[in-house]
Length: 116
Image (tube, rainbow, N blue to C red; front, side, top):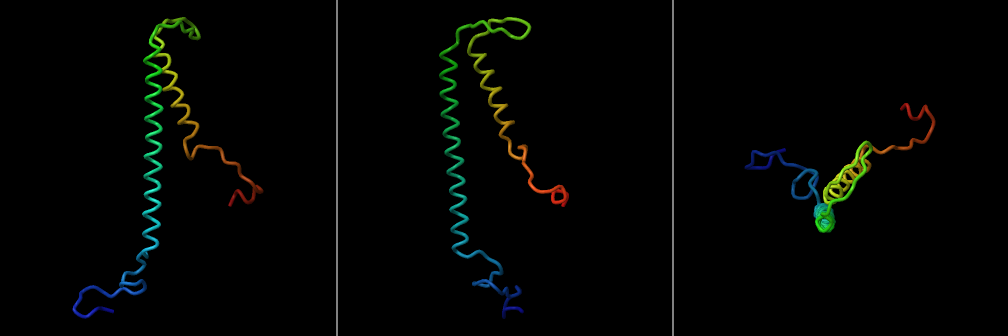
């Protein structure tokens, strides 16, 4: 069905002639969810920046040389590099352990149900 004086077919269903269009309430909830997600990202970024700043202050204030016993030899690097390497390695391990989609999932049920 076409409207008079229009090349566009008339859409039926939702108010305003838009088929399947979101209502005001749906749009409001979607915007609230987006705003909450944005606020969560900002909070995480602020916390991460704070942790990095504290870590950097701690590392810079401990820059004297230390004796480090590696597996096959001993070295005397500045403590700043030892702490930096430990922080980087800890971050990498934390990322790999907490990475979504790689966690072990426990399956319940019989073998026949798992085959489906």
